[in-house]
Length: 599
Image 1 (cartoon, helix red, strand yellow):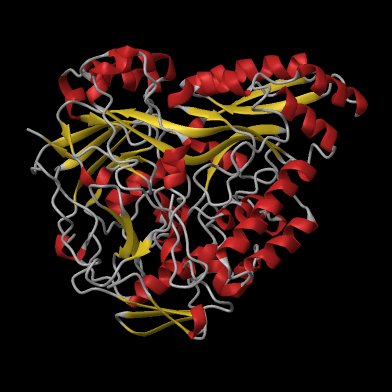
Image 2: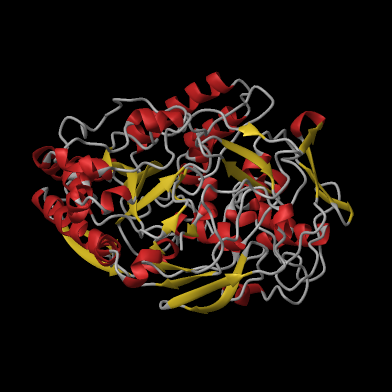
């Protein structure tokens, strides 16, 4: 997702080694059988430092893409509909590429042709000016920045953007800035329970806008990660005033990026057209090459792969934001002389894990039994084998600082098909042989195939699995409910930047439990809370990383809230008339910022 760097000891984290995850074209030599999937070396390249850009780095226009031209409409074959259009509700990866096209925030990521990334000012003139030892961050807005209706973006709009995230109806977005400004866990909401909608504001000692161009954040504790948090889609600008329709903003947002909505039919289609009030001279990262994007939903991976591999008609001009090559068609695509030249691949930062609802499964022996029973290698094969991921031993991805290669407390690497007898024994010891287990899974082809092998493995271990199918478009909304009614369910969680501080606190801090939060297992361990507070105060990055490693091991071994399943990769296909296709290690999919149609 996003990345962190600092000018202090807590430096950090996500970068690409030159070219390591740039466009990877699998040539027609794919038929040789050589595995050209991404490796842990590519993953490790993403755990290095990304620099903060200067004011000069933050100016537009973005560098031209070689061979680019303007014109034409890009077709997009997408499986899931957009469940949110309000940026404050955007967190999961399916919305990442969309947000890059339509929204802008104070900062963003700029990636060059070699794959090197920089955090730069987007609406702001630079990545931020830090003072008071990191307790104060100042941002100055650029000239010429406007919303799609032509309204200039001012500091009042930015203040409104952050204050509305305190309102109760905002449940699914990031909470970094809110908690840094106003209190840990869910307590920040008390600072502005109605958001700005009744005329109240955060005090100037917290968020100050001394003039139309200046925004000053005052934090209780030093914060070195601010520029990287601000680059998240969730902190994109929302206008103050009547255009912010609160809950209804989720279906009709006001855009500031190079494109805006012409139409959106939930579950069916969406059309993006040029935003004529976007000024490329203010934007260091985006382009506006195509006239628009014609997006249709409900394309399963098998459908989009067949269309793109055939490369006929509109498919020549087509991409998918997040659909990958359908796993069973991977070899066919690699062996196809035309299709193999139209591939983009990358190592993603996500750990796919089977969450166990600890409000319902309180006995660790039962959670351990589920973990030992999981058929990890079968699930990896369903997801495309080595091109789709690799078996996970823990809950930190290979792309995050603190990942320990070979860590495998439940023997998932040595017994990748699971250990049903060991699981059966633990279940018997717990006195729960034949226990009913309500298992939720999403209604996609891949998840349905996964569900079949998982059900079989858990039943063999002595469980009585009750499967519940859930609509994919609202999957994370449903799983994010504290009272979701399920025992187990899989999610994929990735760092917001490649530091364990963006994995462990949001995923496992008991104080983060609320509807829409990422503590999907509802872990309520006091030691975890205390350790998070202690570790976050450590300023030496190496020491802090070591302490996150220790806490990670405690969570996995002593608590076991989620069974690690696999570390994810992606392999994506595009049409032959699509130019500028490459991997973006911020969104972790195809880079929509550089796309054009060749003719």
